[in-house]
Length: 412
Ligand SMILES: *Cc1c(COP(=O)(O)O)cnc(C)c1O
Image (cartoon, rainbow, N blue to C red; front, side, top):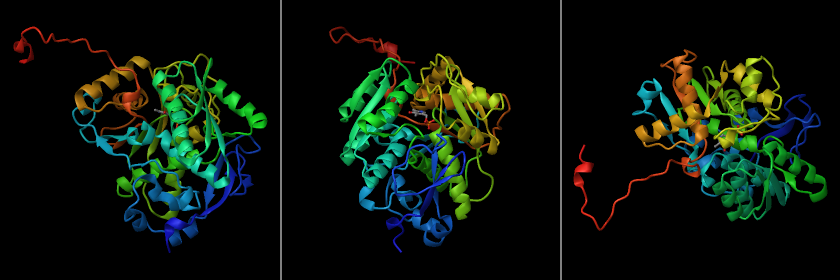
């Protein structure tokens, strides 16, 4: 059987109450106002698809896992040239981090279309929108999600409307507009943009693609977990450091690991999941430290790591459950430590992380020095976007072509 031509979705399920919803229909949040999760007939999937089918697939990027995703018709799989993102072991900077060379590995998501892992989730959301006949999408964004939605929506011939905080980096705003989205800057934070999108559903009729407010972005982010499993030879690393905003990736990977386990494709312990935030916006860390499952709005959120400046998350309890069930933890880092880490790894290793990715490296360094993880642990750090979209230090060394060059200055 051609495993790429079928899907095994059985139903959707409220992540809080377990109430079931029919697949093949347009859904937002559940009646309880919480995220809906896609559920599969994993027994039928296990009978029809084998790990070796995946390994021998010649499809590049995450569409190789189409059998584990909800899109039924191949023509609805929108693609902009996704790749399996590389694992890059830190070597020259390992000492600085306190690590053993090769034990700390970056999964570099900056190689995906639009330069961030938001491509995974938005590709799935847009593909499902196409499958379900939705023609107009709207999204609140700190930059990367809006860019990914704009790109995939245009690729699919859908209309895209994007709302971002007015202080979103200019390059992100321009990128969104350039890729054909109607783009608005709002004098507030991402949750204020989210309210505008939510309240517009009635009057405009657009589909709200906010983090976890539709069921499919999480299925796209799930592919990070599937990819990791395949790349690690169907064993998983000991610990995963994830820069947590809305938390889709952490929740999605945790979902992926359970599905893989139920399929019988992986065994052994699952990785410890570490939710990394910035000290200026750490609602999940605060709730986790207090032993709570829900994380109230964080006031006056600020951090250079724009992708994790998310003051309130509808999937808060799912993030915290994933962290706790995995035996992981949550930690927050100050901006100066985040940027110093980015600079050190770029200088020493030649690998330019985004600030959110640098936050995971800073968290790894601290967790190791505090004994929360061991240097024997294999750790994966998620670098969720290309470092090229973020401000870098200015360069101020000039040479005058009309003057003799002082070559002595180049000799060390
Ligand atoms: C969106 C984003 C995050 C946070 O991802 P979530 O899965 O929503 O928590 C982290 N880093 C970057 C670069 C992002 O764009």
